[in-house]
Structure formats: C-alpha cells, structure tokens
Length: 442
Image (cartoon, rainbow, N blue to C red):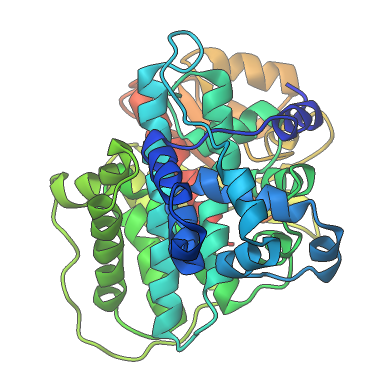
C-alpha cells in the first residue's frame, strides 16, 4: 500500500466518532445557545480522539493557524470558530456502527481500546508535567490523543484486528517508522502545524521525552505492567522528573481509572482491566531520593539491558545478542550477549553492512525477521554472511533497533543448545519488546 495515496484517501473523508460521543454531541447541540458553554464542549471534544480529529481538521484548514504554528487549546479553537460555525459542524457528526464485512464488532471494540489508551496517555502526560511544575500542558494532552489516530484509522480501514502490535504492523505495511508516518498524517489531513513541534522530529526536550514515555506506557499497558520491559519506561520517566518510580506509578493508576470511569466505549476500561487484573508482582516502593535525568544514550542502554533480562528470564531464549551499530566503521559489533561461549569467534566478529548483505537489508529500516530451523545455512550461503555461518543451523529471530531515524543496532536471538523452535507467541513478544525499546529511547 502506498502511503501518500492512503493518506489522501483518509483526508477525503469525514470520519465518524464513537456512538456514545455522537449522542452526547446531539444532546448538547439541542440546548439553547445561551446554555452551551465552550469549556463543557471542549471537554466533550477531548473525551473522544475522533471528535477532536474532526475539530482539528476544521481548524487545521485555516491558513492563519498553519502560518502561526501555534498550539491553541481546544476551547480557544472553539471560540475562534464561533458558536454558529461549531454548531453547524457538530450537528452532522456521525457515529461508528457495526457493519459486518465493513466494520466488524471485534474491530470496533479494539478501536475503543486504542482510543482508551490515548486518553490514558493524555492524562498521564498531564500529571507528569505537573510534577515538574509545568502549567502549559494541553499541547501535550492533545498530542497524546492524536498519536494513535493513524493506527486507529488503519484498523478501521483494514477491518481486522492484528495478531501483533498494531503500530508495528502499520510501520511494516508502509515501510516507514511510525513517528515519521505520523508527521505525514498531520500534514495530509491537514491538522494544525503546531502539532509537528510536539510530535514531529526536533530538538530533544524533557517535555518531548516525557510525552513519548507516557504514550509508550499507555500503549504497552496490556502487555503486563509488572514486566521489566514496561517498567523501564516508567523508571526513565522517574529519572526525568527527579522522583521515585513509585511516585510516577501513581499517576498511571489514576489515569487508567479516570478513563475507565468516564467511558465513551467499553474499550476505555480495558487499560484499567489490564493494569489491575493481570497476574504478577507489582513494583515495590523504593526509598525516595533525587535522581539525575538520564541522557537518551543512557536510557537506551537501560532499555537494552532490561530487554535482555526479559528475553532470558521470561521468554527463556538461550542465546541473545545485541549488535551495536558503529557509525565510523559502518559495522555491527557485539555489545551485549547471553549464552555465548568464552572462546566463540562471534565475540570479536565485526558484521559489515555492505550493500545487499543480510544485515544491511535488515538494518535499512525498523523491521524483524523470523527464520525456521534450516534456513540459516541457506541465508548464509545466499548472502555470504560469516555471522550467520557461525551461528549454527537452528531457528532464530532478529530485529533492528532505531532511535528516532538512527540505527542503534540489531537484536538476534535463538535456542542454540536445545535447538527448540521460536514459536509465534515468543516471536511476537520479542518484537513487541524491541519495538518498545525504540520508543523508550527516543
């Protein structure tokens, strides 16, 4: 599927909202004009990311807003348009409805779950920014609600609930990192250009880092909030804020409960269910002490180490390699490993990234590869790859790691000693973990 064509088709349509939202909008529009309060209408708009999308598209079409690159609040947008224009627009809001073969019930249910995650991320970044004394938060609140919208539209467009991570599938289908795809989505719809300053590529700031961590935390909550790969994001946020992980966990629980108590769809309760009901030990309180903010490089190192522990302890993978990208030599060199013999030649091998080589193709973008037993020898012969030749002949999985648009390295895992296959569930959990490393390290 060609991304530009798909985005153009999205921009040609006015998209529905959740049915509960549509009912609330109709009831508000039936009021006498003197009884319609912009602050209430703003809260209603923020309760459903698709209603927010409708407003942002209306405002985003304004050349004045595009030129200013400002981040007006939703209430300011409504006031700028005026009550009559808003009533005219909102009077024709349509609702998503189940239509077998076009929008199946399970897809609509999954859509509600993803919109609920967006709301959790929005409340979470609001609370985290308040912890560092930030009072200007609505730009990040809106950005958190917008982040998952391209993936949600893809969900509706395909009318299929993916087996693996939704955002990763969207990236794979269009051959582009999700943040980069999001930038193009903002431009094509078009949405207010000020969103690019918050969600687009640009200078790293504490606000932007916390926003990305809030989104990753909310999106990953159904993977198990007791797992180390989820907690590393929360711990990174604690370091940025300068407080304990326990203090940062509290807003997570408050956010999921707040969204669940004011649902627009049953899916709004799913993050709370995942956070509160899944089995496993929850993080224990630690002694409060101020901690220094980690650099992006330090966050990446922490995320890599925690992911390796997860692969070894939870997924029971027997050998784990992280090959770091060395820019000067344009090679991959072993940085971390589990299960490698002391005298193994792989320890000192530099993997070249010559054009057409296996690892050059793998590392050309964020993607993964799952090879069954017996395929490794064929790949080694086809690509003349020394690293693959030295690995053996069992099943293996590999995935590239990017921070922003820069290659950080490649993970490779296998079960060398037992020669057990890597089943689909293990492979999906491996991919999810590596994808989250890229999000956390941004």
